[in-house]
Length: 209
Image (tube, rainbow, N blue to C red; front, side, top):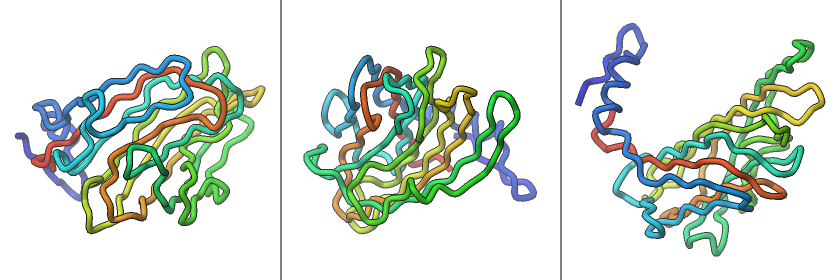
């Protein structure tokens, strides 16, 4: 495995990419969604691995297209294959810029936070359903099988917002699933309607640094 080198507090991206290319990023599952209301990735079902095999799991969202306009795209977690949603605490901020160049901002979105509740966590809000609109991004989930600590996650997505003059919205969010039981399921879903797109699940080898 190639070493990741630190020079003046920076990481050598070439070395890091070489390390990943050598087999440290392991594709577990590719799910192609077509007109579905949600995608559940449950450990032990349809080839999904979500246990102690890896310490870190990466979900890639690729060209997610929603059927309804101005909806949220969400994620939730479960310890019992989505029979019940797990309690979590999260936070969310966003940068945006519209196509006309007339509006731009960086802001904390308090309304998208979850405070010790089982409700869905908002990855993106007001997602557009224009024919050329989509959402892409990634979510990291850390040590989901750990039975001592809470389960942390970090997400970043970019999407076309629904306004008549669309915005590019770059949303950052994070939080923890506030349970000590193992998390064995992750659900992706819009707040209304259905969606199309591709979701890839990867495991990062424990040797990766």
